[in-house]
Image (cartoon, rainbow, N blue to C red; front, side):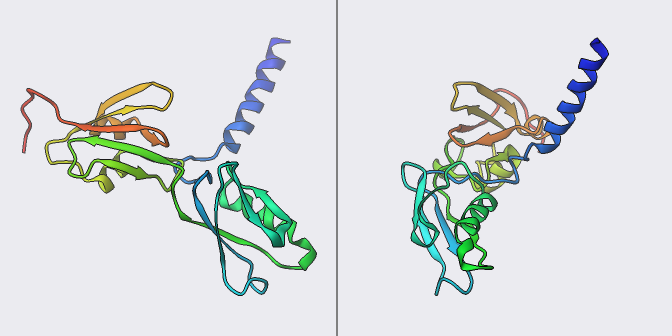
Length: 183
């Protein structure tokens, strides 16, 4: 009996593990983001819509209000394409053109502290470091998560452990104190 449950558990684990999305390759649309909707042959030009506080956009051709917050562009394309099915073969193309919902606060050993916006649901520290350009003596990062958790690591360890930065994080670039560094 125990083997049956173990086998079922392993099968379910494999199925759900395969279904999980890589958050470094996806972007979940959120409040404040601007999306561009194009329906070739229907719109004269692409339509830009900003996601409202309730997570919706207005798109009269698709029946009015559409809930898009929490969805990917592929999911929104499918929603709109289904809603405009009455037009025949029309198919929607959706892209994010204004990234606002995935903000990160940046501070510490950096020339331009402030707010940055992620273009993916999560970004590895080494990628964020490359675009944030910390000072030359910065060699570590402290991340304060939105849930209060704290992660600190040197850049090499962050990369080795695949530490990710997510929306709502506060990222501080730091320098080791009192340690000799090789040049």
